[in-house]
Image (tube, rainbow, N blue to C red; front, side):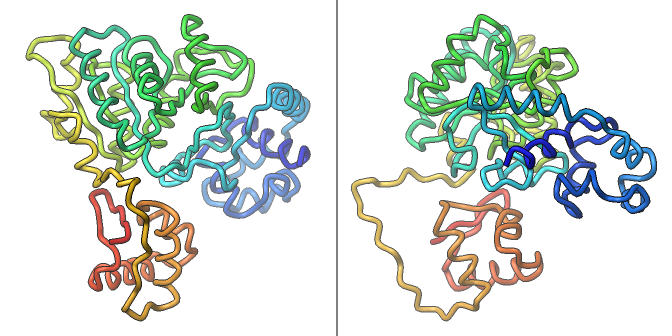
Length: 366
């Protein structure tokens, strides 16, 4: 296991090999095979070529990977590799998923309902009130709340999640050997203690440098079902996160503000440009995503199927029984069926009132 992890970490240390190239390599090899494959064959792969193949063959960073394993073992960090079953599956729908994530926590990163909340580092009382109301409403749906542990709206999102007994995960722009900003150290510890966690793709020793934050933001955008932008100026990390979320086909919600208010300039712009759904009331999120509050008092009785299902439809039915709803891409990945077979099976099941389609290409059992 340690040897396997060594090659996984080493893959992230190769110069010129980023998330996109690593994913290409994983379609052909195991992490260990990447380092043992002939240079000529690596060069022939589309997206790799001679320069990257040369970087792989000249790699000598295994001691650094060994040091990272020592850190992982000492602090009980969970490494989540691209092909691991516990890896956040929503990120696999993105074209550039992190190759390896480092996770300290217990929250289920593949739970059925995940919301990311982002915004300005300097918020108004209005922004604070709206974040509190939104999270209070979402508490009934037992969502996982994701944010970036930064000052301002991020901090509020984590604190109000804890207040409402919701797990919350902070995505970091640095290694797990530190907390930035330091003022949020006690908050980070409480998040872990209360069943949430801290997540990063940066190894230990990585400082919170400016260029790491946009890289971090793509995880905040891709990890969730939808992104809520609470308050932001026209520029900044929250706007980057919103753009990334749109690119990943995630729903983006924005809380509108007063015209001329600099703290609402970004959210108003997103709404005006049809890049975000106007969040008028807290329940808008759940309604748009098709979430219903489960009646825990009612005993769950499995529906009997009176329709003869094909083997492919039975497979999809089984997957949908495990989760409340699934994205069509996740059904395709987990069933190992071709996209055309999945599409045909879903259509037939919908016509027979076995499943229902939701916004964002999501499906659930009737």
